[in-house]
Amino acid sequence: MLYIKNVPNTVQNGGDKVRARKRKHNRYFAIPAYQVLKKLTDKDVANHLGVSTRTYKDKIEGWSEFSLSEGRALSELLTVTQEELFIT
Image 1 (cartoon, rainbow, N blue to C red):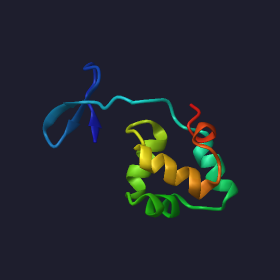
Image 2: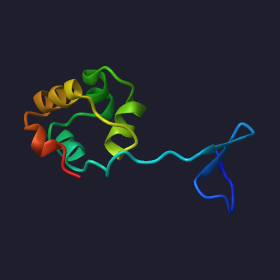
Image 3: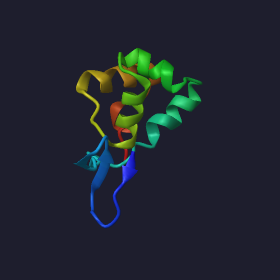
Image 4: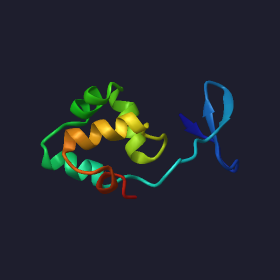
């Protein structure tokens, strides 16, 4: 992916100019911390949620949202409340 100079929020992708994506929310820092405490890899958590590792990382970084069912599944897997997990 090549960035185009002097054109805000655009990315060169296969000859097309496209808008850069915007974050839906700030990065979740508590989820990876609890994940480390449980000694789980990104792949382990992604598999538990039924998504790809890339999708899971995008959700952590704020590029997309966790669904309600994914929030519940994370809470159960990491044995903490959703309130504790979804701190930005």
